[in-house]
Length: 194
Image (cartoon, rainbow, N blue to C red; front, side):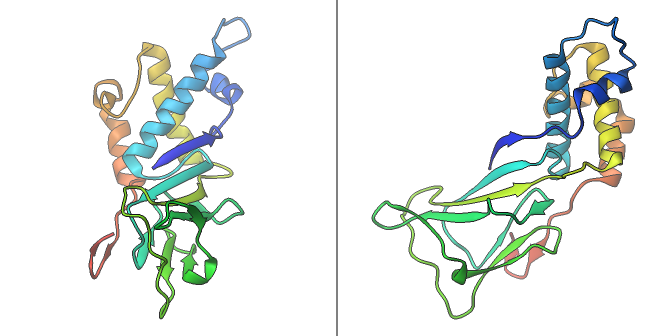
């Protein structure tokens, strides 16, 4: 899955106020932006929830009868499309008559229309691309607070953050909070895991 340009869950100014930085503090706004983006990405990695609204691309090795769109919340907008590489190597957009989209559930899901077969695809990796928008227009307050509090720890210690070193940097109370409140469960279909 690929992430494209995305909006921050809150502004750098809002983060400065949370950190109690004044106009007298010489603060690199790019550094604060990096902290917000980094902590948001760690939150997304740990929870499978998309915080920063933006375009995403899901790459598949072919079509299946049920395709679950990862990283809610899914936003059904004009950007949503399914493209595939046909047997001749041409990229085509899949007509909507081939599938139904259920976007009213936690993980938006694409279902193949009964009595209709998907067109054949090239026998190569990533021959199907689903482009969609995910994330919040207005990030929930509880997620913003978590990102700000963890961002404050990163700012105070001036340390890089990623999913690999998170346990060394972030106090257990924040990690336990995220596990208990925010982690999105995976669903299982009769035919196995999606």
